[in-house]
Image 1 (cartoon, rainbow, N blue to C red):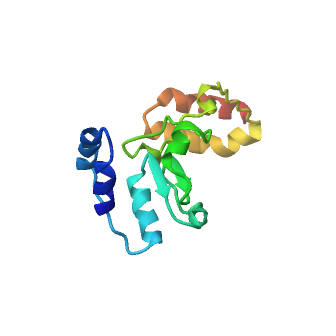
Image 2: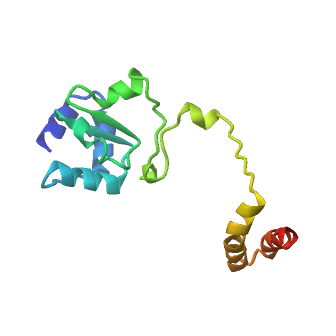
Length: 150
């Protein structure tokens, strides 16, 4: 807290930064492992692991927009120079979304092909799910084909 206040005092736009800090909180964790667990619940836009060996948590961070590892990787690198995208999920959206990437501008088409045997194997389950959702035409589309396949 003292360091945040010291840094804030040195900023030319301290009033703006102070308002942001007014909407923030500090959480003290018992261990780095617990800190990562808390971070995953929070799903931050930016996660800064400012300590040596931060990469060892690579497999444990499951929800973050962008992660900055080690004492020489400030968030500023990601904003301006390291090549990662700066358009990141906010408000805990990192639980379900990634940062903007080139794949967001690519068109994807999915294709499916089922054999008679395949439809026979999964058709009844599809019909049950369609009926549970009261999508009768979906269920009939399978039933008619199963009948024709008999």
